[in-house]
Length: 340
Image (cartoon, rainbow, N blue to C red):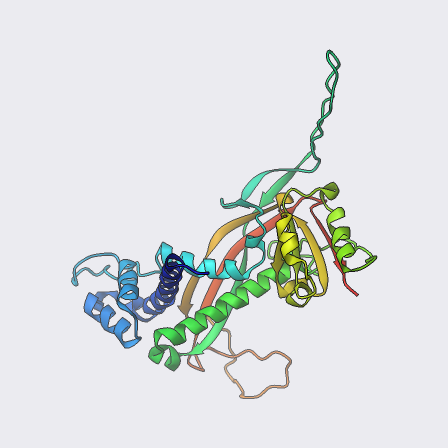
């Protein structure tokens, strides 16, 4: 049951996400005309789009204070940290990896070492020599990689859209980024692209041959990770598979975190979150009209499989959502089984 505190927090998050998309639009619309931009103009801009008073305050707070004669008054207009964080949190709520409880590395271009062999403790008698465990490590570098969604919308729509329409676009961008992130994370076919996209957690693994009934197969995949004793067990499944898990509550009761994502497909994916590290370098939300490459003799039709169009020619603006992440795994931290 949701409390008044929960509802208040949800409303604050909603207002922050509305502020993020409105600030991005205001920056694109007025960023080139800072010498002629004043507080009244910004207020009229927000009022015309149905922004509430709290949202107006957040957008204005993202603008450096100054007099109307200050030519730099609207220069730094950009989504403030709370607003951008709310947008990024929207992506994280839809994406699987932030739900795992994996080891999060917040710094850019993280470099260090990853443990590849576990420590072992022993019982010893009085005066007996104590066995020494030699740990094994491998070098680890996690430069953030970029997943981005570019959504095209007509210039006329953005000029007339109210805050609710703009938020629909923002939500579409959030869903697109989260979907691409999850697919890259869990699809065994994703071998990665050097310098662009990391390989999936399941890539290179040999799927376990299922045996016994459904409940037994769950035990199979968990027995295959971390020596059968994962410290932070996670089971990633699709919604269709989750519906077959009549004992979901029982799994939660014994400490297994069940994460539901379409990217799991018809697989049971067991993960020890203790053996997963990921770097989170934030992200961005902006609106603009990117550079284009176009022919000086364009045609309206084409038989090509992919047709390149000009955003300039078609009065299109692009809403861009970016997330900068990367991940690495311990060799025995992931296993999967494909259901029949």
